[in-house]
Image (cartoon, rainbow, N blue to C red; front, side, top):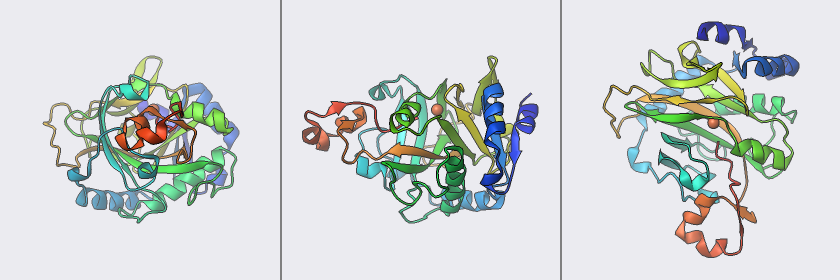
Length: 286
Ligand SMILES: [Fe+2]
């Protein structure tokens, strides 16, 4: 079933402009997930992974919330455990986020992979291919990042994206697409669990059939999540083992915003700043 889905919904291109958006829309309408292969070299992903694992530093973890808008645009690493009630949506999780800003040092050799994926994103949104990649444009920036779901139970409960689609609506980007860079392979990097989409109530674990560097695309209707990664193993907080994926979501630049997201208010340094400012989930967490 999952092999059939990945095969049937795979767009094989070496240039983002070759993706027919009508066809892509039809595939998403039918199955709520599509895939793109050929834009990212699997060898480049392997090199990135080797560097990422080598530099992995548990000591860099920050809490899952409370960062400032400036920090999230820098080299922030945070560990999210729990229901994330402060975000206003109860969505249990256990994963780590490593932001890899395109204006920062390319510490893992990840930026080329990210840039190529941004071009795909921009093509899908009908924007210039270099839109909001190297700078803030129209109040939006690329939250280039890696999500690490540790071996020994990393997970994200199944859900539909709600926050970012709303941000997209507010800024006039139109239809929301979630774009995920496949950076791990089931059977190699982990044995059980991993990224899934639900189709007709059945969970399909796409990393079983995707290659490194494939890109998965969802929209706001797609139920997706990450099922417990290698639950039979003991969680080792010092290890980069598990499942990783890459993202290029457009976040709103809220450094000077009149609306803030709740996590911002939880940072004690921002309490004065936050006085009288409207309370909203504007950051764009997906
Ligand atoms: Fe999501």
